[in-house]
Length: 518
Image (cartoon, rainbow, N blue to C red):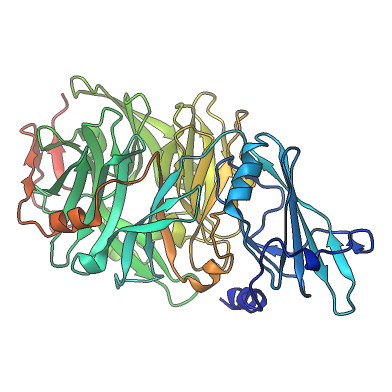
């Protein structure tokens, strides 16, 4: 946080304005500095979408005023003077310049006048404009850094082509509950689910489907709410995890960890309103979580670790848990299951896998990897790894990782962009970063989600959570969502007759379902 305060002090000296000709530097008489200027956030050598909002930034060089020149191969350069280092680029000129130069480099040159009246001229900052656009909207949850207290939170929608951000739903409109685990079918903003926990409206799933809203109780006889989720490509079936979560708090070092005492996977059929599963994804000997469908809908990928036999007597149960990446065949027409396969035996490498996300073309799988547990953002060593499903190559995605924790991530609909959460800025709060993924299977240097006020993230002490790309704005009104949240009309779900509850164990943490193979 001290770092952010320093940025804020440097930025708030004044507000600049583009087009002040009398503040234009004498480029021929300026003193050339043999390095790029110090700025925040880092924009040097990044790759940006052709339709992204302006990458506003702070100049961390002392002096006054500042003069900025932005140019590319075609079109008129953007030039302007600022009385402070808070640089806000005119959005219309920015869009015009990017649209004229897809596939070209973009250059930003910074000039700073010193007390003696001489201008310093820094080496230009270079970035590349990718021809591939990014999906225009991003949906995420914003919460405060917290431990067990929910506090204020909400689901938000951000227009990536501008700086427009609006709240989809705030939890102070829903009884102060926890709003979590949102997901969309095929990047469609009109097909959305999210869960809410406790509070006045109760524990339910809210589903928006082509203009219709429903409040769904997914618990059946299990009496446990569903959590981590993924829509099947057919839009009819949703895979969920349902688990018993525990936190571990530490007095020294990093503050906390998470582990499951029980976890299985299930499918919810939207049309029949039934829940089903199979032995391969609800084994009493394993704990299954983080379901992810293949783009063709023929496989369900998930993370799986061994059940802890005597979890109550383990001093640190989270360190004993390492999750492998597995998959199971699925026939979406008949609903029958295939064989269970090991995709990545991470535990044999001394690693634990989480959040598998498959590229839209089905070739690559990006996952979070840490030393243990399945909650990577609580582990400083966690990073993103790439698995080539065609060749089997598994490698650290070094270009987009940092010494801090990297976690939740999502592919764009064209497979050329990835958004992910990272604690690299200060080690505490998570911010969103976007990275280009080229056709040769390589990531490019990531950049922080652009903000209209470049000092914005210095003041906003929040955690960005579960970013999801969507192809358009969410059309359902906040009022309609609030009405559904508080509605007494509830869609009840039934249990597949081929699935029955397991005999009760010695505690509530006994795995839940017992299924017959079919």
